Amino acid sequence: MFVFCRYPLTNYTFGTKEPLYEKDSSVAARFQRMREEFDKTGMRRTVEGVLIVHEHRLPHVLLLQLGTTFFKL
Image (cartoon, rainbow, N blue to C red; front, side, top):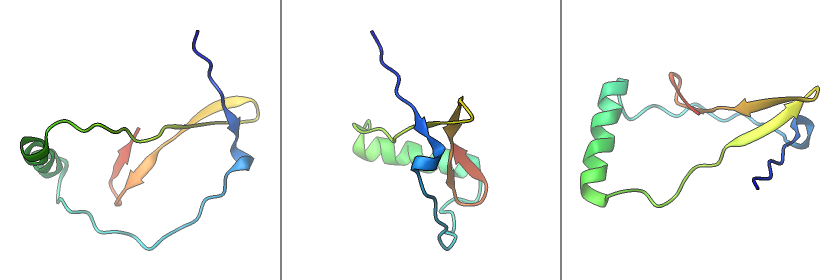
């Protein structure tokens, strides 16, 4: 059985940082860099977290933003 815990959005605080400039000029360039990294190091053994919260009793999945144009789900 899978237990799914979600916590109120009010439990978290979010800050802002200075923008980081992207390493790649396009999504295609990013995927090419990722392929090259895979050839060097192989498959990753870690995962990034997924933050699921609720606001007004409705679930929300928060996206991670990389740079100014690329979002991760």
